[in-house]
Image (cartoon, rainbow, N blue to C red; front, side, top):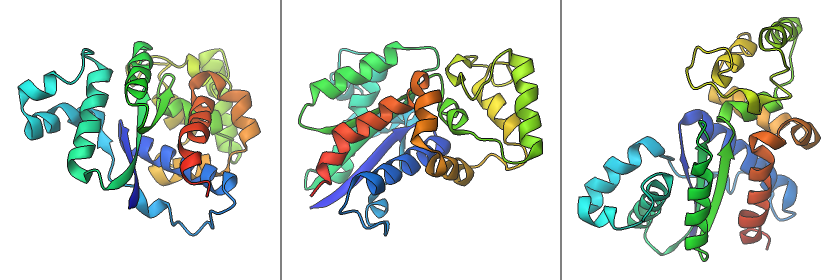
Length: 238
């Protein structure tokens, strides 16, 4: 049987962060993992939250897909995603489904995802919940590189009234230009290095876990770490 990991996420930056963290944890936790990317090649093209409804309607039609769940929010979207994954990959594969979602001020999203996880106890479903967005995870891992980034961080501390790398969970504004929007803050701090998925992945690969435990507990990154240990690692610990 082929073993596949399929990510449901918001976009390419989420994919880069999740992939970097999972690969790193596998390498560190599994004595059998040889570090030659033998697991990485089983990552599939991610399924985006915003496309699930249209894809489900295309494959299943309106009536059938609306009978899947009593939840009309993320629970329904997650269940649609699982059915789409089964449709596309069949049942002859071992499929790990990773539901990576931004909070965006809607903590009920997490409850909905947990309900789906509990509804399918025999499925490998891993939840990642970023508070308030995935950029908060990158900010928790951010360490200034060079004088310009140090100066940018100091300016943001004054602008916000707190250190965004210590309290990234407090960056909750949804409007992208707002002062406390995590994406805006990250772009300011990363001006020198650029804002692209490969740089974000490198940051997540290199940061010390102690650093993330100190700064990332309230933004959900360490819960994601524990979720991988509990739900994913046992499948590879042979």
